[in-house]
Every structure is written in structure tokens, then in C-alpha cells.
Image 1 (spheres, helix red, strand yellow):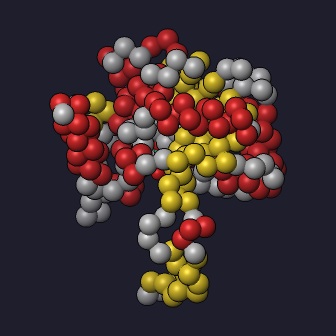
Image 2 (spheres, protein in one colour):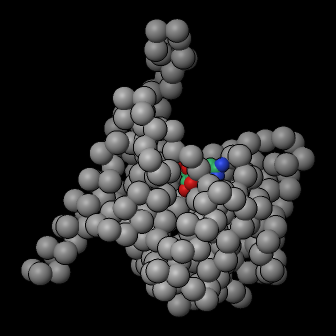
Amino acid sequence: MRVFVILPAAGIGTRMAAGGVTPAAPKQFLEIGGVPVLIRSLRAFLAVPRVDAVCVAVRGAERERVEAQIAEFKLGARVHLVEGGDHRQESVGNAMAALECDDDDIVLVHDAVRPLIDPATIERTIDAVARHGAAIVGVPAVDTIKQVDRTADGAIITATIPRERIVLAQTPQGARVGLMRRAFMEAETDGFAGTDEASLLERAGIEVTVVPGSARNFKITQPGDIELAEFYLGRATADLRG
Ligand code: C5P
């Protein structure tokens, strides 16, 4: 049983724009403490010896930049690049098609823009997939969750969803390759577009188990998130110093 990782990194990052101004680089290329977000994510997976290969989906125009960063940070041998698509699901699908793997192998997908994922959580996710077939990292909801109808002015609440039944989905999200392939094929046949892999697995009738994540494993999305990541990293350094 081998373990493959897919890092979709072909987003454009429009939500990162502050005051309507798009940042100079998509969020996976912004730097935290001098290290690009994508490189931090890659390093976390390469720190797990059980990971055989990592496939990064990038836009054609950014391929050279990513190759240069991989060389600069000496991440070489286990990293491969594929062309990303117009949607996350397409980027992951392209990487799935490029993997030379068996149905019994494990594939994990991780948002390149979650750079603070830690090797221990990755290990727990691999163990959960090995045991149950499919697993994702998630955190309990702390806020009260409302279902709404969108209106021109904003939204009107239609229901309150008991928060003890809610988990906020993070990544990695993974499955046995055979199950993930089936979920992707069924989604494509039905023209279904999901924002994560679990939604594809669920609709294919595959049970997906949840591994506890943490607030640290957040997705760099909005202005201020780079500073938040630096805060978490600074705190980790301070903890080490005691
Ligand atoms: O846009 P969102 O925050 O959901 O992006 C999650 C991840 O999917 C990011 O790492 C982003 O680069 C990636 N993505 C992709 N191809 C796209 C859109 C997003 O690889 N077309």
C-alpha cells in the first residue's frame, strides 16, 4: 500500500483582494516568514516518510516559478507537477489521472493554501483511511450555525442547525484510490461540482470518517491570514524555547 498526495495549487485567490485590489501573487505563493505558502504545505507532507509522492496541480503560467521554488528549497525527488484546471475539482481530477497507482493505494488531497498542516495530523489521516476507506480532517463548530435564504439585502434565517452535529471540513481529505476514482467518475457523469473530495465520496455512498483537526490548519483566504499564520508560527517557536 503506497500513499500519494495531491496538492491543488492552481487557484487565483480573488477573495484575498483587499479593497478590490488583487494581490501581486495568488495566495499559495505569498510568503510566511520568507517561505512560500505552497512550499510550507509541501514540506509538511514530505516530512511523512510513508508519503511516496506528491503531485502539485499548478497553472501553466506558474510552472516555472514552482519548479524554481522546489529546487531552491531542495524538495526534489518525490514532487511532481501537473497542469491545474479552472476549478479545484478539475485540478484534483487532472492530478488523479496522472497518478500511477493501484486501487488499494491511498490518495490524500490537501489545499495548498493550508500551510500549517502538521505531519502528526497527516499520519492520523493516513491511518484512518487505511482503517475505514475514506477520511477527512475536520473541526467541531464553535459558533451557532444558521441556515439561510439569500436575499438582495443579505439573508433571512430559515433554521438553526444543532452545532453538535456540525463539523467544519478541512484537508487533508483522502480515500483508497479505487473509492476516490469511483467518486470522481460518478461526479463527472452526473455533472456534479463539489468544493471538496468528501462531498464526492458521500454522494457515491462511501462512508467518510472524521479525524480531529485544529484551528491552526486554516485556509489562507483573506487579508490578515498571512499575519495570523505568522502568529501561530511565532507561538510554536516560543513554545520550543520554553
Ligand atoms: O478557492 P479555494 O480556497 O477553495 O482553493 C482551495 C485550493 O484549491 C487552493 O490551494 C487553490 O490553489 C486550489 N485550486 C486549484 N484549482 C482551481 C481553484 C483552486 O488547484 N481552479
